[in-house]
Length: 307
Image 1 (cartoon, rainbow, N blue to C red):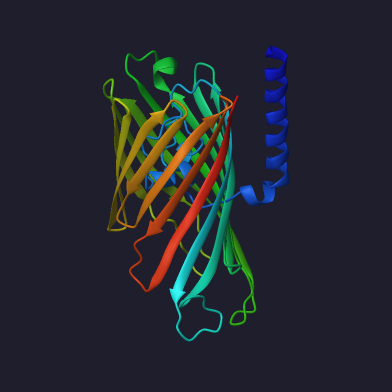
Image 2 (cartoon, rainbow, N blue to C red):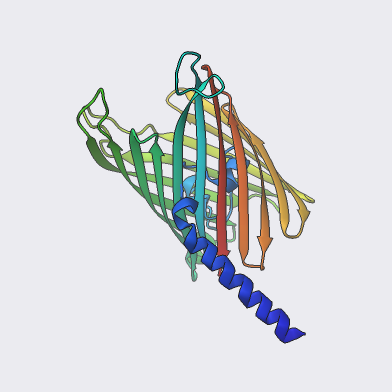
């Protein structure tokens, strides 16, 4: 009986790997929020030891005890109202936006954790954006022998943006630039975590025809653990714009969590399911509060391996 169980587990692993390889081209996607963080409406300043942590706070690989690898895929739909368009469907002209990505985080003994990510966004074949991340998170307790639960981190991002030739623009343009993020993370009490990050604190020229730089974003957040609930709250400010993000996780089973979130721009719902102990599947759907005549929503999935 035991041999049969081992054989079935091996067979399941083989089938899973086959499906991943077979559909790799469609499983991989970009939009700085992926399935896990999108469920929380991007409340990620205290999103701890996740393959998406580096997108929100580079200090969040705190006490990482294992390596994780994830594949992301996002399918976006942007449908503008178009009553007269021959290509419209049910009164909306669809615009396809696809994004994909991969991410890996790994612990570094007595220092903290390292993260690497690749993300790519294709906007209706008109333009594309590719981002490479390198993230270092440093546990100051271990490095400086502090008696506080404190970590800091830095991320280096390398961007490649491309504008394709169109009917109204015969030229294709490409530019590349770099940017840095810094952040801190600390455990205030047994149930409360705090995070603060400055996103794109420095960037080189990101413009093609003129000098442009990414706006500096300031993000701070708290998370609170109460029985089976995790509550996340972030505040973000940049260029006289601000956003409040609230996220909620409810643990139904040991292997199943339900998630929801809302901010000023969209709402999110999702779940994650852990199977075979080391695999986790994330799914999220977002609906955007567009201030123009449009339907805007997306589906996001990710598959994570812990090793």
